[in-house]
Structures are given as C-alpha cells and as structure tokens.
Image 1 (cartoon, one colour):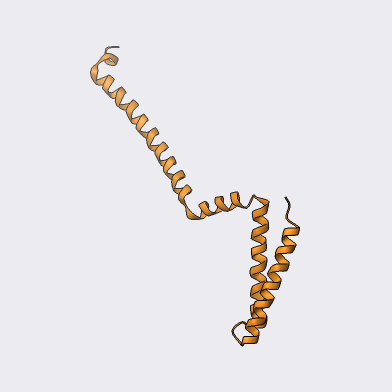
Image 2: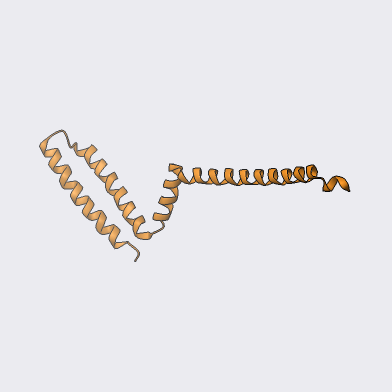
Length: 113
C-alpha cells in the first residue's frame, strides 16, 4: 500500500492520464483537420453547392433551357456555318434568335410554379 502513496507512483499515474488525454486530443484534431480539408476540397464544394442550388425547380428549368439553347446553337452553327459567308452568318444569327425564343416560351409554359 505504501507504493501507491509515494510521490513517484502518483507522478507516473498522472503522466499516464496526461498521455491518454494527449492521444484523445490528437485523434480529435486529426478528425477535425480531415473534415476541414474535405470541406475545402473544390470538387466536394462544387457538388454540394450544385446539389443545393439545383433542388429549386425554377433553377432546374433555367439550367435545362440554357443547355437546350447551347445545343441548338451549336447545331445551327455546324449546319449553317457561321464563318463561311455573310449569308451563313446572318442566317445562323436569325435561326439562333428564333430557336431561343421558341425554347424559352416552351420552357416557361412548362415551368411549375
């Protein structure tokens, strides 16, 4: 029983307690740093932002309208050839304006309010 009351035994016991606390704190810090690094990862940041933004129905419709317009404009440019002649340039511009008008009217008509 005397060995438990000696100063050296108490110091060793206190040292073990402090080492255990140190390991626990180091593990906590490592987990927090991993979570922080994952949070600032650009890909994960973009994914989480896109998921939260695209949950809105109006944003979904606007994004799909933009995508359809982009695809139609690409096809018009490939078919009519924007850089081949003045006639091709003018006709591609007219077709782009007409198609974007029809697409936006159709998408707005189907928009859920």
